[in-house]
Image (cartoon, helix red, strand yellow):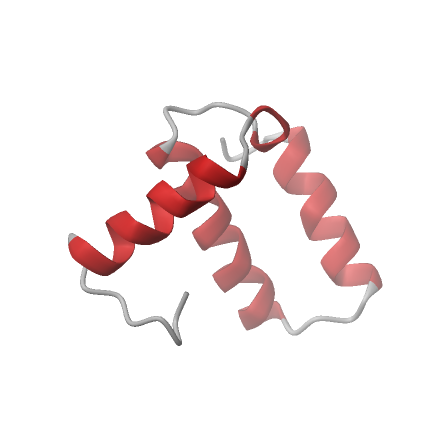
Length: 69
């Protein structure tokens, strides 16, 4: 996933919008976690239910607060 065209396109958009490098790294990390949680399926193939399952997993299993999500 390190050379993923998808992640590179997101990185490009964030750089164009002048996001800080730390914000870029954080967003890409969460996107990677989301993709891995969904068995490496491309985000365009996922829907609202997949997002809900991921957020529920974070809250219940990882004890991530809603403000972090």
